[in-house]
Amino acid sequence: MKPALFLLLLMIATMVGQPALAGDVIGVRKIAVASPQRGKALAVTIWYPARKGGKETLIGDNKLFKGTPAFGDAPVAPGHHPLILISHGSGARIENLGWLAAGLVEAGFIVAGPNHPGTTSGDSTPIDTPKLWERTQDLSIILTALTSDPQWKGLIAEEKIGVLGFSLGGAAAMEISGARADLEAYARYCDTYRAMADCMWFAGGKGYVEGKAVATEKVDLRKIDKNRFEQSNLDPRIRAAVLVDPSLAQAYVAESLKQIAIPLHFINLGRPRTIPVAVIADKLAKLVPNSTYTQVDDAVHFSFLAECQAGGAEFLKSLGDADRLCDDGGVRSRADIHTQLRAMIAEAFTKSLDTAM
Image (cartoon, rainbow, N blue to C red; front, side, top):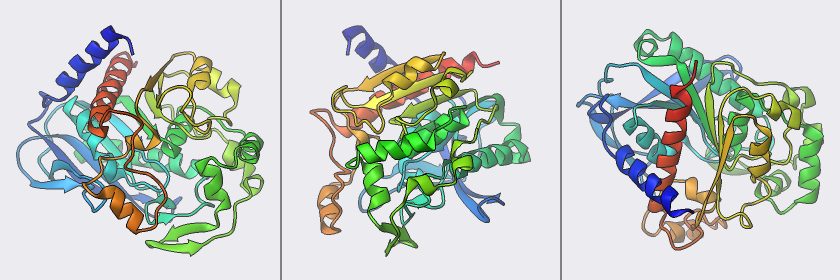
């Protein structure tokens, strides 16, 4: 990284670390949003600039991950705030992205995201994973609900809506921004790269339902609903997107990327030769007319997860989990990587949404 850029990021990080003028504290609320498509309500977490009040809590705190402090049900600070929708990674939970959501609130944004049914921790199966049309529906439904609710409508700047996605959530954010994927290309990718995490998941024969491991059939990607997989999931209300290690990187239709009309900001975690082919995004960025591309040194895919508790790695081993969720890629701590990412993402949305028409 160039010294001048590093100094700029440090300056931005310092600014982002200060409370936004719009509020005194970070508020958080959990709501249920009806989803006819899912046949159930979506569990949604909202972080927002707030006035003092509410109950201090740690969102996402558990045996593995550190939580993020916020004030439950604190009064919403008055104002007209940009809204960022977040889509979490496969097998993760929205609460564990509180480290990022809090940083965006400090920069003046309202942030909302669901736990996507079928691809959330404890509720995740291989057959549900490639159904990106369900994830994009979740995000659009939440956006409609918030901008229709009298409690939130007047607080959201509807001309300044962004979306952020990580991993499988990055694919959902790509698609709601206008990208389309090719099913045969995705199947060929897994034929070629069987050791990639998503391809191993499809072939593994195991999933999770109600918090318990269950045996599942191996997924034949070519039997996925082709029409739905390849349909456009564009929501024109989205005005900017940040994609962190977006999955399906080998399967997007080039022409659909060339036609994307909003700013897209791609971030890869790691050095060029260490970034998995599953999520490498430099070539995608070159196809999108208004895009940027950045890679973060000394990071790995899991660096986007919350900081682990002391003893977190040992706890994973005790569960027989082979994923090294607590390991990062170099000498930098995950906290340091998060500081850089918060600054980069806040800056990307601020610049893009300030120019949104």
